[in-house]
Image 1 (spheres, one colour):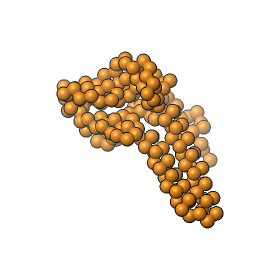
Image 2: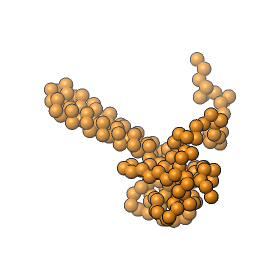
Image 3: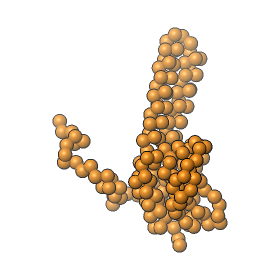
Image 4: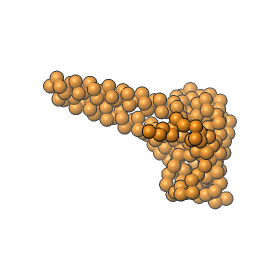
Length: 183
């Protein structure tokens, strides 16, 4: 049985993964970077918690307390939905615009309403907590000056301790902006 992920004939070059394929659809929303290890670890922890809650619900159901089992099932579903939403958080781009997806809200800005996209040095939130540290942020300036939270920061759950990945993602979003917005 061939295992291509264990053989040396497969290219493990990280830059080869960033090349756009010729059949890529620029009309569909895509995240121009991979979710970071902190975000994936938090989602995995939530899914692990959900599995324990489901196991507890099953034990409660076999004990005969159906209402308690239903509460556990509902709690597990909420935790699973939170884990999936956490994986969805980030910056998404398409031919139509740029979308900043947060845990509770999303903001979509069409490219024709974008005045500028640039990377700046400023205080940024560390892993989304209220604590701020000095770092880099990719900011979007709308026409009319309406504020938008930073699209990406080098201290969020996707790019903490991965400055090269932040630079690559920021450059990619800026390139999408240069290609599709009207100057």
